[in-house]
Image (cartoon, rainbow, N blue to C red; front, side, top):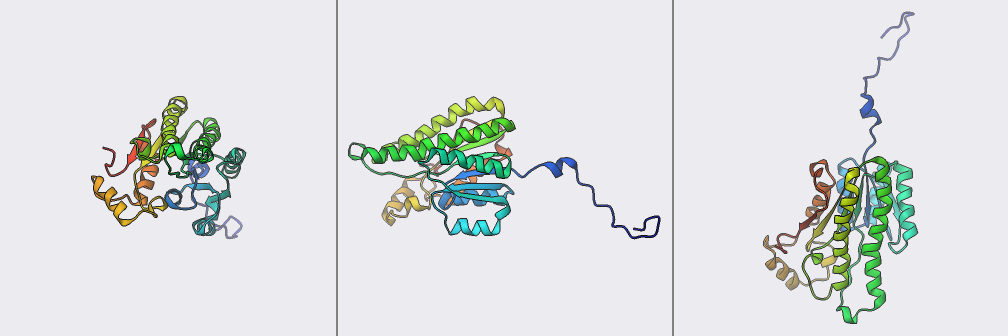
Length: 264
């Protein structure tokens, strides 16, 4: 295009709607995202154009790969689930970097097997601290950010062990059942401020949790499951991604069981 004095000027840039230009990408915070279900959830959010932050005790090949390929939209920090101050600091880190927290997924957890009368008190306390207390601390810190925003979504990863009793996992079951109670109460507290809170309760799926099972044990679980198999890890992750989406905008205070019918 020529100006009045004959000089060449660049064409005017295409107009960008002001609202679109100023709308930031949503932010998902996932605890325990270095492997397994957490890694699948992180991958799903990144594929949906979220900025994603995750923490775990150690990094992994998955964390290294995502850090290389999605550095601008990805944040990882080493955090021990026993360290309450570190958990709060992580939420502050994420807020400082990305400016908001739209979704929290409390995924980090540890399994502990053993008949309760013979378990060490230290092992019981460890399960409660990592599976429950850490989730409460993260929910509290993230909820404060969401309250300032006026919106948000919290998803707690529970377990079918919170719904149906099994011998040898009493402490683990107690920690997961408590998460479901947290879900329902928080949904009441935060709903008026447009913050939804739900749980996902997976059954058995292909992950570290079943890697030590024999083929016979896997087959017994499959026979007890109406759909006749264990879940694929992405099937559980998809339930989390659904609850975090606008398609679930009127769902709160619920526990979505993803177990192929095992508990029905």
